[in-house]
Length: 495
Image (cartoon, rainbow, N blue to C red; front, side, top):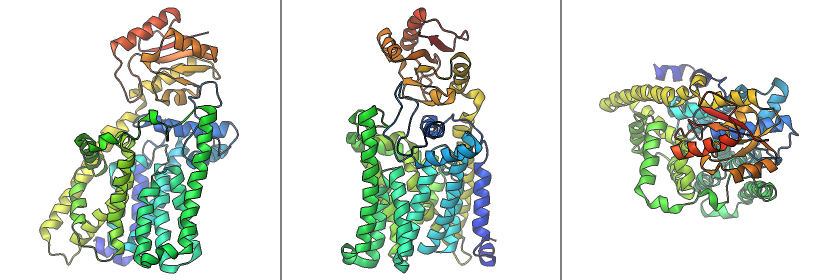
């Protein structure tokens, strides 16, 4: 049936089916507030968008909510995603729906170009299967409808490589300009694409030019443009940190992003491997991936998929702590990953294939991948976006009701800004263990009006509050009485 579909309408039917399926899977719960998995990352992105909208729309001065009584200008990645959402807010109003919708749109564009890219490297049947996996794998679904720039990053990555291959075939400047623009944007959204896009792009150029690659003026212009764009932005962003003191910790050793000792431990590799196996491949997609790896390459260009995979793994080594903590740092691995899965399905679903056992095995794994992915997505992700199950959402409503809109608060939610964002307040983030008379008085002098938090959770992702931490809070509340009577949360007026 699939072969007939491809033959009857080779240009439209498969991609239209994939786009429709992608939309159907991603619009569920699209109106959800910023809660659940990685709400802290989404909250910062959403806060920057809202601050653009409420303040001056200055793209070069992103503002976070946890800057205390300062303007909150922050050293961060290039905030183009948040800025576009702020522009949408200007027309339609500030609702999280628009951020999620932008992510979905970026995914749909990425899906279209992935389909075209795979046709260039392999063929249309592989393109269909590759994009099907790209659409249905659980973390691809989740992070393509969250309020963060991962979808835009994947979109820019795919388009950048697609137009680079176009340029290699045509040597037309518009193709190279488009590729350079999207690769530069990917590197501005995250720094790491310099590695996991740069190496595959270098390989692709080498397949055409060989050693003459170093004498291609166009490639020098292309590379310098990308590097200068990245350097200018991150230099400017660092100046914001030096002046205002707020940062996401790109270069600060205190963030411990670059603890390379853990790369030599078995735990580092096993944790990333099993996370990728379970959450990204939904367990049963991994055998299909392995089967695809064993298929012989038909052209030198096809080896770019292997180079791409290795380049992504290299970035895990370069930022080991970040890669270990944040599962979405494995998302770029799935771009070449789904293409390799598509190769396996295309080969063994072909009507001329004689490997019947392989075909049955792939059908079995495909069905189990869909089933396991549905369970993982529902229980581990969607269930945690339920408002009635979110303690931080309930506390945010209490903060809105019991504090004045412009009042600065001390949020005892560790490094998690979710409460500040949901309550539409600004202030400071502090751990329970650091709550004491001295720290509170220092913040009161700076304008803090309330101390808020919960006895039941620290960060939205950390539900463990030990007895010593609770006792510290209760000691403070003896002097600054709790306005809430539920025994679960606290809002203490400080001045």
